[in-house]
Image (tube, rainbow, N blue to C red; front, top):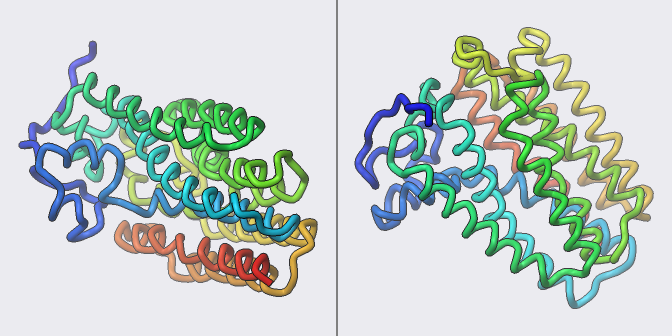
Length: 316
């Protein structure tokens, strides 16, 4: 096995560079648990939000189309817990594959595997435990949703390698992170339709938007070690590309709510969703990593605006 260039850190020691300040993992979690919780990004909850929100969108859109059912209460709870678990499993898988790269990047060198806080075997066991727990939740869904959930493992498995063979790893992230829009529609209705597919496409464009902003934090390090990203690909043309992603996201989100028979509240959610993305572009400085991180973390508010519009529309 290739030797890892690591900084040895005491278990429960330093946090990760982009963790939320004073997060619960660094403050209150037992010291022995902290490396595993950091592998799951429990100290950086924004990723869970970005995986969860498309699930809530898809379920709310399905309720607009065919009405609420009692099972939906469980589905909201299930996808919330499942998003946390699958995000954790996916991030652990990502860190297993990127452990050498992470040790070469300033922002990521304190991650548990790169820093030597956990072994490869320990990380692998932790990943399997999280994935199995999520699978048990998936088994409470209908059969079509179960199979769709299993298929979702394919883009999750591919994503860590995307930066090695394409300039568009953010596109592969979008495929994986927005799968919940399809999954939760099927969990509610039992079958797929055009409306959730359009919502899924909107989500992919949304991911290209926010993760390009995020990737600008590592642009210089990525160039040194040969890692590809849309941030490096777009460079000074980033703003124009982000505007394009706003247009795609807003257009397909509108088509989704239109096909589902939604009303003005859902349309208002789409409008707020698009305006929030525009606000991010207006305030972006691609040469300031702190601004990029702030705007990336703010992404959840745009997703919540869209969810609120869909949810309220489904309630009336």
